[in-house]
Image: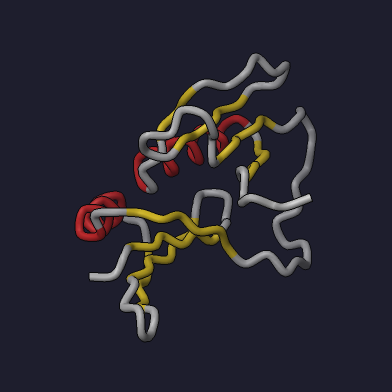
Length: 130
């Protein structure tokens, strides 16, 4: 077997948080809602620009009474997206009141923006070298 790449991330949450996550990933990160097969549970599939075949973020509604632990010990740190238009993204983050911080990768000059989604997941946005 050969692994070809990351297929998608899945976030499972109650409906209110699911809607907030959809808005965040569409309005802030720049994904768009698209086709989702008719699964029995509610959810959204979010796609990157120009993508129609593979959703990169799956949002799935948790069952009533299902508890997700937010403070479980884990080694997970963040997930990252390749992005464009750094200045426009920063303006959108500022306008939406989303806290973020920036970094530059040594040697390559690639710019990074780090933020947290409504579910508390850390997100990294990567922008090509200047």
